[in-house]
Length: 354
Image 1: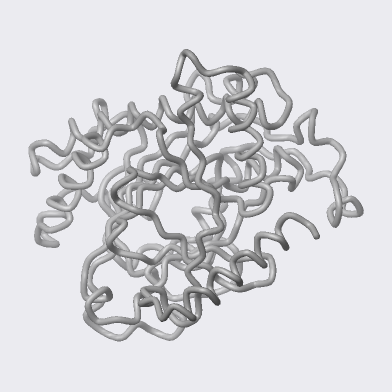
Image 2 (image 1 turned 60 degrees about the vertical axis):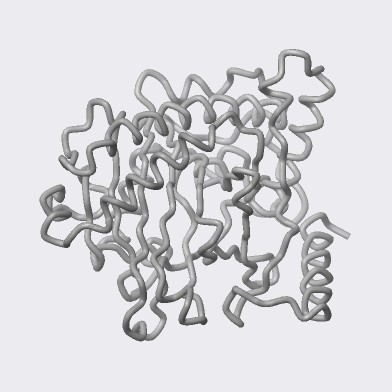
């Protein structure tokens, strides 16, 4: 049985067991909560005493996760709970302000075009795939560069900029580690990916705030529509108390991805450029943020901290040396053609703006 089918069977078994135990469901009825997305302990990449065998074992788990799901849950990743909580709390304080106050930090531009605040109604991410879709039920604050130098900053809350700067620096460090893990998993020199991210990487920090759902949504409207991510890795800190993230499995079913607060876990998925680099070996998986079906959860706000790790704008993304020969179902399709990283990003953003 192929790896993704084994994982799918494991999900089905887990879901059946949960139902038999009469567990309380927090996901909508169109999705099943599944624990099969691998949890990967990155500590061997932070521990001087770890062995090459320890790091190779992590790389094998990483390769399995991204080949099978395009997603992984990472722990012991070097980002402190204090850094996460600092940005989470200051972001909630920002989004809790009046619309008039938040709009002072808006450039009035389309989502993604300029840093700063974007109100609800500006983005429909499903349009980046194809067709028309209603606007997403989300507000955003986006940093296009290090928060220490970002100009589109609100005066309140006072700790917003320093908290964002600490988080940005932690994400930069974690991205370098994930590139080392990936290089090992793909049979490349450990600093292989550095050439695509220097001198100016295409990093973005997006604070995604999903307001309480006070009214019924429009037909087909979600907190964030189904899409694939556009760039390299997406590093996500979702609110463990507010479920909603769902990924699409190979058979088309949707599975909820749940994390626990006590282990400071982060969710990582790959975007379109890593799928292109690996010639579809690693999958840029469709995912979405659903609207909870219970009033208690749908009536509560939800906040995600999202760090996009794009290569520099002019980087040419082509199939890696170790991924030239597609396997299995992709063998007859042929290699994906090269693409300029910035062109792909801008085209996706253009489609997604309302």
